[in-house]
Image (cartoon, rainbow, N blue to C red; front, side):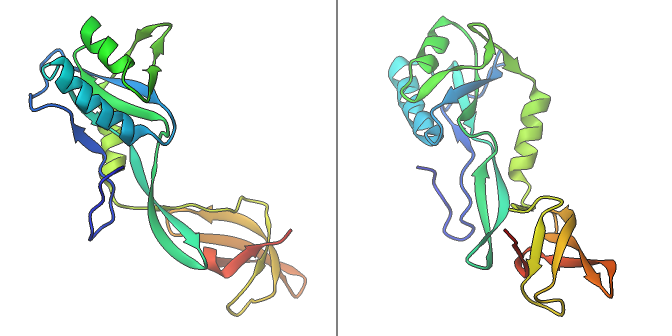
Length: 198
């Protein structure tokens, strides 16, 4: 289970697997795990590394997560979800012992690569993943798409029906075209002010 802080309710995403600093030969590899078992696989990997004495070969792991704003029971709730469910990034020196240790860890289904050969990812890609994980600007998760017919539930245009013209996930706003005096008029609304018409 991921550890969460009492104050921020933020999940951990970077895990030290050994006390050693990464060597110059270390690279980042992507492993596939059972979806929803990423944290269990990391805990099992920590134990395997100590048991096999490979603390100088396998260094750290990342579970990419990002903040999202979700609407639950009419309230905006900030939550965190995995960016790549079922995948974990592992920094390691690839050799036969390290490969077999990671590959045979409970919960790990394999490495990502060409055929049976694990392929490292660039440090630039890892830095981009870390940046999106560390920045705390949540995006809204919306059940709406452009062109959906929605009913305005509150505000001055309550009970009007319109079509979604655009969605701004950063701000949690949508632009709806409604008919006023037989003219289509765009109105900017909050996600909470509309409901989907079936």
